[in-house]
Image (cartoon, rainbow, N blue to C red; front, side):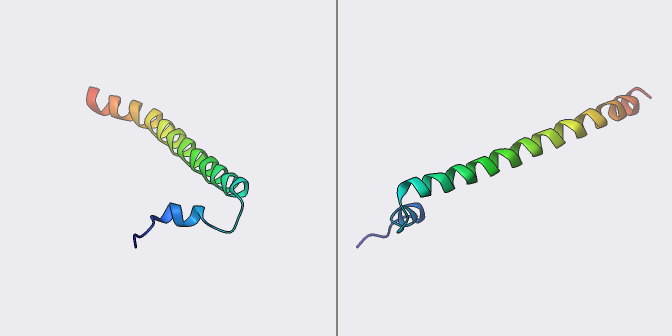
Length: 59
Protein backbone atom coordinates (compact mmCIF):
# COMPACT_ATOMS: atom_id res chain seq x y z
CA UNK A 1 0.00 0.00 0.00
CA UNK A 2 1.54 3.26 -1.10
CA UNK A 3 1.17 6.59 0.65
CA UNK A 4 -0.37 9.43 -1.31
CA UNK A 5 1.27 12.85 -1.30
CA UNK A 6 -0.51 15.61 0.58
CA UNK A 7 -2.08 17.30 -2.44
CA UNK A 8 -3.52 14.01 -3.73
CA UNK A 9 -5.10 13.37 -0.35
CA UNK A 10 -6.63 16.83 -0.50
CA UNK A 11 -7.88 16.26 -4.05
CA UNK A 12 -9.85 13.21 -2.91
CA UNK A 13 -11.62 15.45 -0.41
CA UNK A 14 -15.42 15.34 -0.21
CA UNK A 15 -15.74 18.75 -1.87
CA UNK A 16 -16.40 19.02 -5.58
CA UNK A 17 -13.48 19.92 -7.89
CA UNK A 18 -14.91 23.34 -8.82
CA UNK A 19 -14.96 24.41 -5.18
CA UNK A 20 -11.43 23.10 -4.71
CA UNK A 21 -10.26 25.01 -7.80
CA UNK A 22 -11.89 28.15 -6.44
CA UNK A 23 -10.02 27.79 -3.16
CA UNK A 24 -6.74 27.22 -5.01
CA UNK A 25 -7.38 30.34 -7.11
CA UNK A 26 -7.98 32.39 -3.98
CA UNK A 27 -4.75 31.09 -2.43
CA UNK A 28 -2.85 31.84 -5.64
CA UNK A 29 -4.31 35.34 -5.72
CA UNK A 30 -3.27 36.01 -2.11
CA UNK A 31 0.21 34.74 -2.89
CA UNK A 32 0.47 37.05 -5.93
CA UNK A 33 -0.65 40.02 -3.84
CA UNK A 34 1.97 39.26 -1.17
CA UNK A 35 4.64 38.89 -3.85
CA UNK A 36 3.70 42.19 -5.52
CA UNK A 37 3.66 43.88 -2.12
CA UNK A 38 7.14 42.55 -1.31
CA UNK A 39 8.54 43.62 -4.69
CA UNK A 40 6.98 47.07 -4.33
CA UNK A 41 8.50 47.53 -0.85
CA UNK A 42 11.90 46.35 -2.10
CA UNK A 43 11.78 48.81 -5.03
CA UNK A 44 10.83 51.69 -2.71
CA UNK A 45 13.63 50.77 -0.27
CA UNK A 46 16.09 50.50 -3.16
CA UNK A 47 15.05 53.97 -4.40
CA UNK A 48 15.59 55.37 -0.91
CA UNK A 49 18.92 53.61 -0.37
CA UNK A 50 20.50 54.40 -3.75
CA UNK A 51 21.09 58.16 -3.18
CA UNK A 52 22.35 57.47 0.36
CA UNK A 53 24.82 54.88 -0.92
CA UNK A 54 25.89 57.16 -3.78
CA UNK A 55 26.56 60.04 -1.37
CA UNK A 56 28.48 57.71 0.94
CA UNK A 57 30.62 56.34 -1.91
CA UNK A 58 31.26 59.77 -3.49
CA UNK A 59 32.20 61.52 -0.23
